[in-house]
Image (tube, rainbow over all chains, first blue to last red; front, side, top):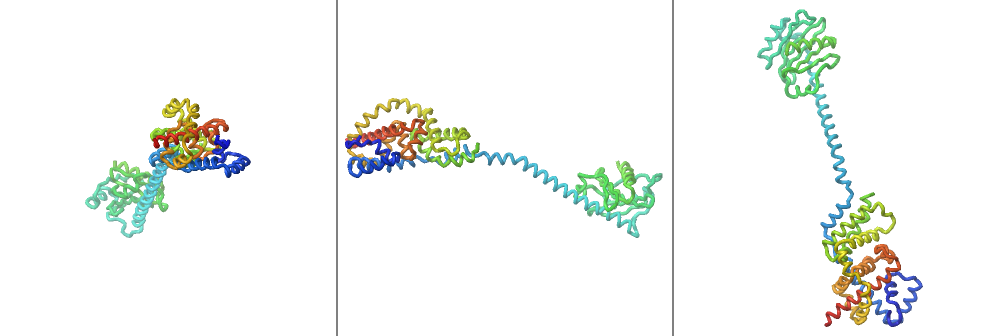
Length: 250
Length: 175
């Protein structure tokens, strides 16, 4: 209590903004006339003004702020990265497989086109053979020294196939052997090349029968040699010839 | 529970809570532990926190309760057990100091802080909540977990103590 009978608690509450409007008005009236209470209020205000400095007396370090921040921060960032990782890897893998497959497809298409072109050009040529013989012991030795590899021809005598001849061709800028086999009115080309480089890789994932420009094509790889059998004969016949050749070269 | 929402609401209080924790503990390392635990508890309890109610008072309350059960908080409570009975002595001392001297003294930041630091922690805190954090009596009641009517009388005793402490400071210097 002050000497004038005013409650100090009430004066403080007045400054705190915690007295009723009515009480506030009465107090303001009193303060105009009571110097003791006015001095009291002045002291209180002075304390308060200085007290505001207490608000920034201690400031946290940046390190500590980061610590708390990371403690309460949503886990979304790291969480997302880790949850996305398998999906991203899978997507990359799929993309890679697709690219390889597409490239493979392109290479294969190019190789088949080349093979088909060779076959067609041979059929259209007025001079289709470098070596004309139905004897495999004539045709095969002819290639000696002309191609950097050797292959076997089966005995066609007694089968529906007839050996017509052979010539030296180039597939993918590599020397290759083209052997033409007749079957009735059909002519079938057997192309033999080294299974290497881009040409070989074109077929690394594939083999078997294909249909190209209405030609039936059969291809396989054996002991580093790549074989193509292409012609307009029945698919069954092409496969039969392929099998005969395959067993001759095993 | 939405962590992002909690971060958005609670991080702006970080500086205030840290400053307040330093005032309570008087030690930066203890204050850091206190603030860290406060945020951890608040995050855990955030699901129960009703949106639209006073997050600041809620966080200060967690800070206070955490402090009271901490090592420094228990130590403070043990030494200040009889705090309320000392007030009358303080009040008597307070009146020995002339208002003019008190007024002059109150403008000195160091003297005021020293006086505030010398107070029992309960008094120190209620003064800080009222005059530094500028909380209403209702908010203070929420933080301290006491009836609203108690706030005014405790605040009054705390201020009398502060005045006495300031006066004691002055008398020491005059001597």
